[in-house]
Amino acid sequence: MQMVLLTALGVGGATIIGSIIGFIFKKISHRFSDIVLSFAAGVMLAAAVLGLIVPSLEYGGRFAIVITVAGIFVGAACLNLVDKLVPHIHKLAGTDPENHSTNAKRDKVLLFVMAIAIHNLPEGIAAGVGFGSGNTNEALLIAGGIALQNIPEGMVIIGPMLSAGISPKRTFICAMATGLVEVVGTLLGYFAVSVASAILPFALAFAGGTMLYVISDEMIPETHAHGSQRGATYALLVGFCLMLVSDFLLA
Image (cartoon, rainbow, N blue to C red):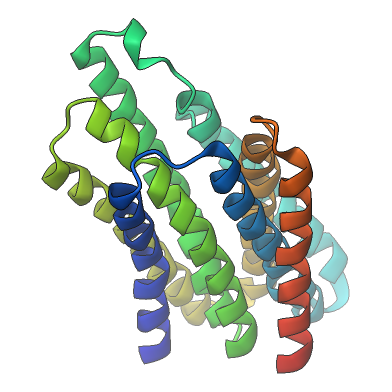
């Protein structure tokens, strides 16, 4: 339990680390952000497959393939529903603040931050479910991938909030709140699987599906939208292979 709590704090704290970097470097180039985010996408992709989907097949028993495939699609469908209700990064980050009044601009930025917080919940649950499987090494790989993704996400929310006229103190509190959501999600995922171990195969696949959805629908389009797609592709491969090597060495 102590390891789960520390990991939950680490996953949520990564967003805060990213926000601190965002305060220091208020204008981070798209190229740098895309490379970092793509690397994190590669790490998350490997973590989703190796740490969640493959174990789901292993724990699923006789109907493993049915349970795993169903879990992946249900997880993706749930995030798709969330996307319809609350737009995410690539739908709000590109808005032109000059075309809106201060209040409208502030509302749009706060919606952007709220969207990140909502999307952080299933990511935290994915980390918690990993620990619920009992495989600490795989769980740490999953949590590490999510934490890496949270750093650039924390970075990108600072500039828009400050430019919208939100005070630095409130900006930091909002960033910290988005990280706290991930801590709550991690604990929810862990306790849910611990209490009802029968749902473990489905829960693992569900968490894997949410991560695959985030990678495909959010991270890859965002990193390929600013002319850095070649570097972003190689960064994704580096992140994926790094996790592959880590998983092999820890096996």
